[in-house]
Amino acid sequence: MSMVDADSAAESVSHPDYGDIIVVGGGCYGGYYLRQLRRARAAGALRWDRLLVVDRDHACAVARAEGLAPTAWQAASAEGAVLFVAREWSLFFGEYLGAMATRLDRDGAASVARHAIVPSPLMPHLMSQWLVSRARERWPGRGIRLAPSLEGALDVPWQRGGGDGSHYVSFATWECPINCIEPPKCPHTRGPRAWSLPPTVRAFVATEHLRGRRLEGPAVFHCAHRAYGVGMFDVAAVLRADRLVAACADERAAEVLVGTVSHCHGALAVLELAAS
Image (cartoon, rainbow, N blue to C red):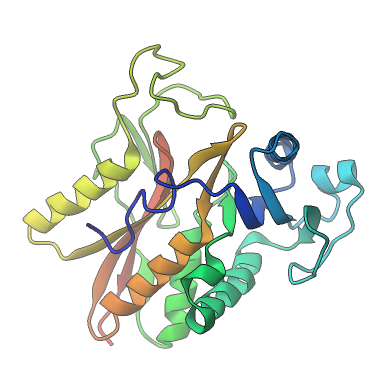
């Protein structure tokens, strides 16, 4: 089993009591997720200390609708508060996840266990970008990049390279609704959902090992349904991936497969780290 197991923090345990919930984007998707999370909270399905909506646009739809002024993500707040953070996504995660990594090192796993991220369907592969950034900080001057392409690598009906090292994959060849929770019976086919990306990605890595490739991971951040049509993955899973990269590439060249996936859709990337 991988050091960063695909399902370790996604479906085996749901966390109804959150510290931070980070909603990526303050547009139509972010507004929908905010409404659904508030309904879930009102129904007692979950709670949070802070909900952070992150968007670079000071006048995004959520900020306008909620009358929210930009607030620093470090700001203290009343329990259950909704804060708007006017920040470019990669800059925000550089600060936020960096602070969480420091907290993990200092205070242990329990200190970061209650935080989660709600990704946007339209966001770039922010987690792989953060892992690359962390690796470059850890090993300045070392050759570190996202591999150019995984085109055709996985056995899925739809896949496409993103041009920036990201590789997008899907088991759906149709357009899925935003509120689909990917149940055991697919709403589109009306038959059993006989597919899931986390085990598919693990199987790909296992096959590469049989071919003699030393591909590490996979570090998979499984965005699974938590409440009222909202999918999340845990911050702790991203921090474990950072530790995996640090451990496997500290003294040698390495390739590490990372992915942010649901059962049906995902973004994958291979981190390539040259020998030090």
